[in-house]
Image 1 (cartoon, rainbow, N blue to C red):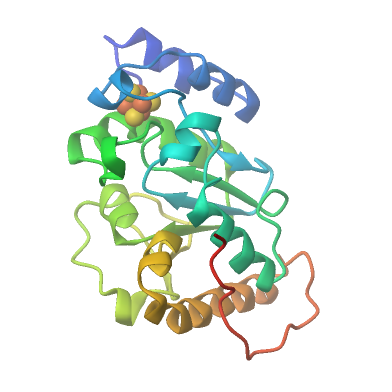
Image 2 (cartoon, rainbow, N blue to C red; image 1 turned 120 degrees about the vertical axis):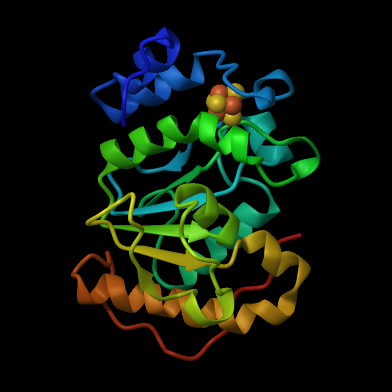
Length: 226
Ligand code: SF4
């Protein structure tokens, strides 16, 4: 992560030396580095535990997240909570959840390249301060913004497997379906269940699962919350 000689506000935020200080500086910054700053209510930095070993990254805040100033608190977030509970993880204790862009894209569209690029220094700072043992990306869009030079990602073949991203050496990544995709297409749930079981196995093998007692291998992705 580099400092920008001409962007004192950004430098002040990414110059933080603790996660808490970084999060406070970003939340209070009034950032207008991209167009999303004009329409947001809150800058949504995260939800969860900054000391967690697993960092989860989605695309951007939705309406509920924008209103509350917390990541993944809407329907997709509640489904994510249920999915992680099913593999023995508490999203507020065992994960830190963040997004590629910290401000809500209008109409919940995907973040644009220029928006993701403007916000990337903040995500990179989060990754550096959290120092996660694994990063789970929710959807191929998040992957595209983190590693634009990577060849097209095949969700069907590559999701749920450990991958490497050239810009982030030494950090294993795993792509999972975005829970919002499961809300619209229930046919994806069996594959998602296999992917999160793979995540659980990875954490157990690394000695990082908080509850290493083996859960049953069968089961289903929990039903979406209304
Ligand atoms: S999305 Fe990121 S770069 Fe854009 S205004 Fe919000 S905090 Fe700033």
